[in-house]
Image 1 (cartoon, rainbow, N blue to C red):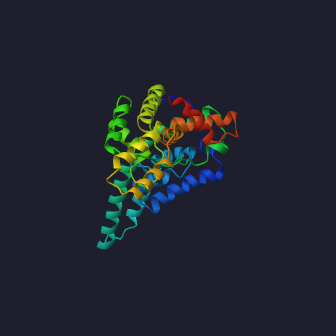
Image 2 (cartoon, rainbow, N blue to C red):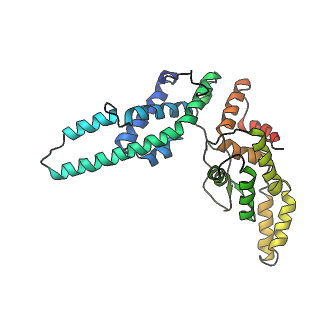
Image 3 (cartoon, helix red, strand yellow):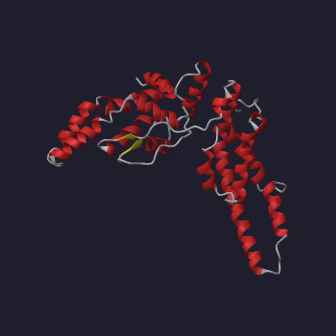
Length: 293
């Protein structure tokens, strides 16, 4: 049973303008993008968690393939309007109907996957009487990806090994790719929805990763310079050292990647704002970084 199963959110928990944005999105999803799941995935995180709750809830009600659903009724009505003597019109409608129904099946599967974590988070907000004016803001990823300076394959194996008892390999790689980069430029991080079942073990694993690669960074940078000596010209060698030294990684950077990966961290910050409305996310993450030890 859901932890907050007795909580029943209503669309009137949102302001009229916020509720309107929910239905405008559903209208656009259906009439402009034919229930395309890629469009849905691309846009859903642009809405607040309360809005995401009702987007997923009403998507399933509007776009299921049940007899009296909005999708089925509009398809039936559109079919009745087709001129059966016009082969091109019939073919066009049949292709559209096949596409949109196939998209509906894919979309509902995606929503089923998302709903569990979205529902729990919104009900968490209601249960803890969190300030809606704060909570309805759209979440944004924090910071940028952490650079992996050298021995990238070795570091990736270290990351996989440290977290193997806590997460599946698929989730670990999702966390890794969202948090680290081996390039000077890379796509910014996204907000993930990984769960924390053992916070002590997670913080311990991340500290081991931080310690083995980033804690003594100045010494490691010297090692990098020595390692590349004779391979890179002296001038570029010096530039490499200066560039890496300027990007020293701290435990705060690790808290940023945790904020991006784990909704529990994001929710705990929201709750902390109830006690201190002046608290900034950076202050909060700096305080939480002490847990990485």
